[in-house]
Length: 259
Image (tube, rainbow, N blue to C red; front, side):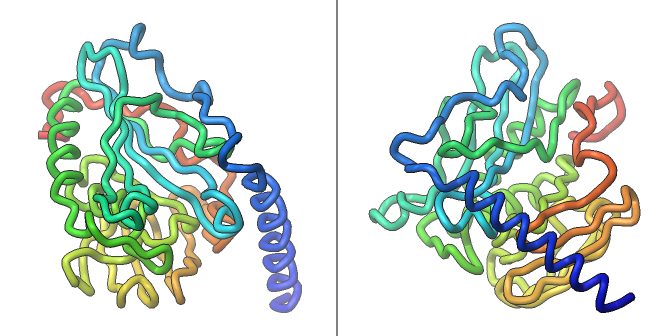
């Protein structure tokens, strides 16, 4: 049984690697950056919205991991603002954090985005203000490392730890999410519902109500979330009977969440 299980897992990993490499194999200069049709239309939806997305990274890196970003739209705003870290900006001597007006669900150089969090309703404007503050205070703005970090996923995880109202469960393919900022080896889990120990994103363990249990070995994450019976694997990502986000999480007025 044990050997069969490992063979099955190895087969899934191989298939996922092939599929991912094909999906990101197009020339980045001509790849689509069109919206995917996932995000609400700001011209129609007037309430405040926060969404977190991820898509397979560009080129060979996409076979192993994703690039993540945060999109926000305050109440009555007619556009989304996207917060993300872009590595080439640092390579060219600039700051990694990019804050731009653009579609929330824009394809990442041809790769289809996946929604990891969707938050709406009363109190979300206050959460947006906290996201902006955390993003602008990111301590690795002038430093970028593809592996094990700090990278774009380190940035999103940092913001999530500073804004636990997001309850963000990043996928195991978000390599760099376990690179703790400010030299910490123990910190809150990105969801804010647990804690993690991590040595520079290379070796660690995480336990949280939102994430379940995860083990990180050389940046590769293995885990299990009993809440939704999700298996977490490197390259493959999250395997579960239900999607990570079933619908927007709406904050109830007076609930205290987001305050």
